[in-house]
Length: 229
Ligand code: ADP
Image (tube, rainbow, N blue to C red; front, side, top):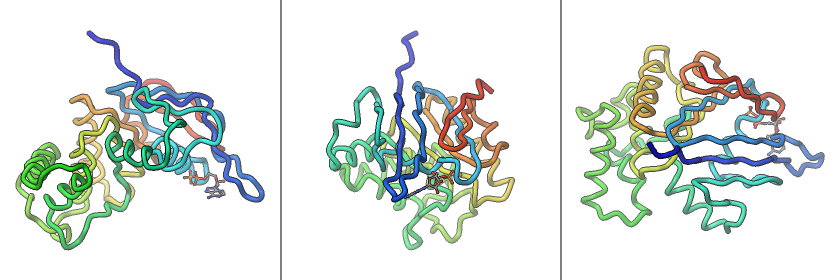
């Protein structure tokens, strides 16, 4: 068996908002997430979760230390290259699904490939494949308003997957869902992870954090490994 590759490597990565006064929001984080892991990051409001998400999601660069994504040192990249890398390697899933209301499920998913130069027919085919992967083959042409919250989040997961990212980065993915829809979305993430997807879920909810296979806690910008679950 080949060794698992690091997908995310943070080395002494910290982020201080400039202020004034400067706010040290993320301490010196050392974290390696290998291909095929399912990591959860749990912490209360104000603990640094969004800051962590923004760094790992290539939305903000650490103010010191380094961040390697798929072995590539992102500190050396210009903004346009960071944006392109983010688009190709990271699939985002947010609490508020952010679907376009007047587009069908498959159109919402296909749109994620618009800027990757994928021809229209292939975009449709890949959107359908991604929707099948999240169990929505019977709702491909449905409009978001006719879908349940859990189904909308499944469309959002399909949209995140369609570009074949290295990492699925989820920010409170069940925050807008009732418990049965939340459970079905978490089951989907578990299933995707079993088929090899690398996943990070950021949450304030310990019950959600317990669904991963490895957990870290974040408090006052400091990450502490809680061990394998
Ligand atoms: P969480 O997502 O866990 O609620 P955040 O990452 O948003 O936490 O915030 C971590 C800390 O950084 C908090 O003390 C917050 O007030 C501060 N913070 C967040 N964004 C900014 C900003 N743009 N400028 C200054 N301070 C910020």
